[in-house]
Image 1: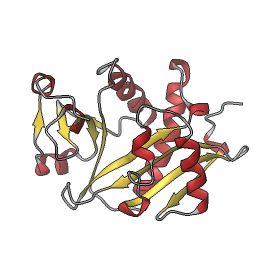
Image 2: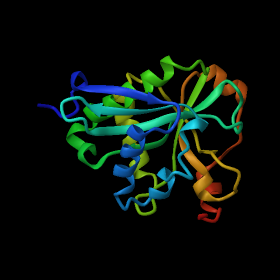
Image 3: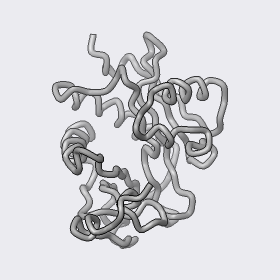
Length: 201
């Protein structure tokens, strides 16, 4: 059986912490992931999201992937960050041969989150990897485009995701609704400008 079979998944959207979600969080935190700090109680606050979803494998009850919709005032009211604090659980991380199927699971979560919100424009952002640079981002964009039927526009340069002028706060991005994005007209920087910044903590 394909472990990414969408007929063997279900999605639960959380708006506040509960025992069920904290069990999932603890599974995430049990891994010594390089971005582990993003998922702690202090740094992943469900109440700050317009829905935070977990995709479960129905037959096993295992969490597969999680992420939420986020705008804490840093974006215009019609814009939100999609699959904020995205995390894919180790059993469901993808090899190149099954990336399209794996990303369809993520896209099912995105579709569910869009269905309960009414933002005009959504962003997905990702910082460069310490060792791989933009290579993982380029791979991610390729397979996300396949899985989402080209729903996302690929951004040029880097967009600021937090209020510090360091590399970690300027990230690669894709977005929906080209018209709304152009009306927003956010500040962007080039790769050369990004390289000149300190890495940040």
